[in-house]
Image 1 (cartoon, rainbow, N blue to C red):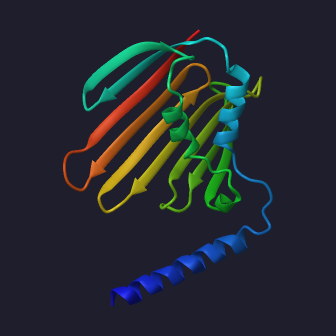
Image 2: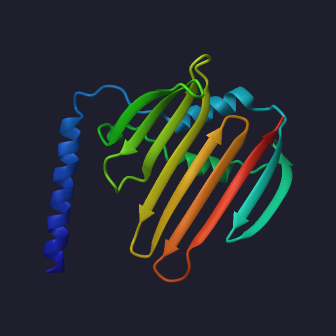
Image 3: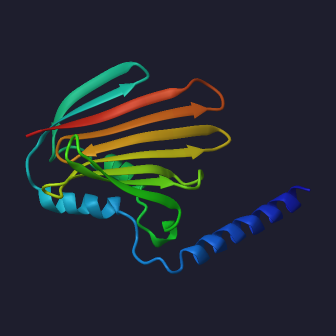
Amino acid sequence: MLALLLLAGSFSCKKKEKAVKESTANIVGNYFSINQFMLDEWNTFAGEPFMISKTIKTDGKTDSFLTNSDTINWAPMLKTFAETDISDRKYLGQYKFTQFDDNQDNTHNFFYEATDEDLFTRKLLITIDRQTARILGIYIETETKSVFDDVSQKLYYAPLKTVQIQTESKPLLGSKKYSVVQYEFRR
């Protein structure tokens, strides 16, 4: 019986994947690339000295310290954001895209929302200054669900100002875990 369920599940996944490919076959382009944006930021600001205040809040306990752009371990932060990239063509048609202006703060916004609840990156909001066309902020929500643990993240990046990574984990057994890692750039 289990073998029949697995076999039926694989056929339905393949049918769904084929339908998505057929429905997006005529779409050209791709969605916003977090990875390309991070590379551009890195190439633009590499070598500039920044003081960085790093604060870690985990389950009610707070730890903070000062560091600088030369000695900080960038890999975990970059990896967290890189995993949210939706620019691969396989994601075309899997996000509802809207754009809107916010007249209160004079910004133009691009908003991507996953149409499939199994996608890792659930929401992506890019806020752009209408006068300069510079990115003012990127907000991302992710979610993974498994039998043993549900993990959601809220990521925020304001160029050369703030990086914030909020993570909430709800394990099947044990208590919920919540952490916030925040980097404040001091220029």
